[in-house]
Image (cartoon, rainbow over all chains, first blue to last red):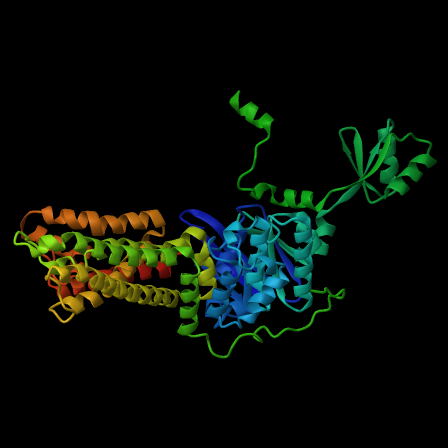
Length: 309
Length: 276
């Protein structure tokens, strides 16, 4: 269980994390979602006692991370930046970490086996690919067999097989009763992995709900209808209790499915030119939610052209 | 690893893995020791320290023994017996700087502080590992240089015995000075957090500014020159100082130790306060 309350971090005049409060429960995967620069990594660094909060607090199982006698046995973390010396081998990297928290040395080979790096345990990590580096980072996180696992952008640089592996691993860790907290800027990835979602944008919490609620609320679908008799069709569908929005000669219909719309229109002998079920993706929902909070947005070309005129 | 299809939640004691007693300073020390010796730069630096320190001493003694034995010599043979240590200083500085700045350069510092959030303890363990290694390496190198160099001096009849005034003190002093320099460089590294910048600062302070300071006029200038870290600290590491103006061996080393301590306290303070 991770408890974040009133957490704030400012750098000079810039507010990176702005009065953030939420909890991460055990036994499920909680996704921490936000665009780059939203404050995810800053929050995670404060969680690990690396950065000092300007205000507020973050505790793990009731106490600050830095107050744990052996933090690696309580919280396992994969940090976003590769916190490795390129000249050291994977095994040596895990060996010193194990020594620092008095974790038995045999655990080093266990986690190397677990993440699939046993064959390259003696190789200097500078020669590792991004994906191998991520796997080593996950090995570090699991070294102390911790009840709380924090992974910052774990699928970065992983191939599809690796992505699926992380997803399965996260679900399994949660099934074992552990607290699993994963940050990502990819909604699609979170939709498949997380049970619960905390969305952050510009340092503020935009949503804190179950994945199911998030989908129900944000992934709206509608039936797109095109007809030469579009006024009549709109009236007909409204009469049947549907919500109809005319958009550029199209009708966006909610409250009736495509079959019902087709049958109603057919019964009246009206023409239909198009009848499509349109599902807005979670990615879209996430984009809409965070649109105003993206720090580095690319401006559309037209806007740039207009500005230069 | 097999994956269970059910995702039934079991209760997991969050503290089940946490030992009753906090892993002590010994654990941090072991971690730092492993870290120190599992990168190539450490082995290279220590080997270079020995090769430069002992090798240059042997070389300078071999080439100057005849002149030292002749009547025209205006230097004491004792000054030559630790000559190579001047070069060995560079490697001690490199080792001390890298012990700290390589962690910042690679992002390792976050892993270090996540594993051991007590920063004072991390710093203490680093200092013990660094100074321990440099003291042993420095002392061994000084002895090796003495035995090699003195063999040439003995042949010309100007050799010094280990029991002669200041010789044994200079051997141990070589170890102490190397350890102190490493710590001094580490403290600068802690403040600057950048390898090239920290190296430049320390090398300039010890080699360039240290020598230029002797050009300063007046009593003030003389004191500044005597108190420059390299000038003050190195007296203890030579049987007879080339520089007649330098402080007495232990006085000089005490001054150097005090300077290092001040820098280390400032570095420690910054380390405690800053975000990793």
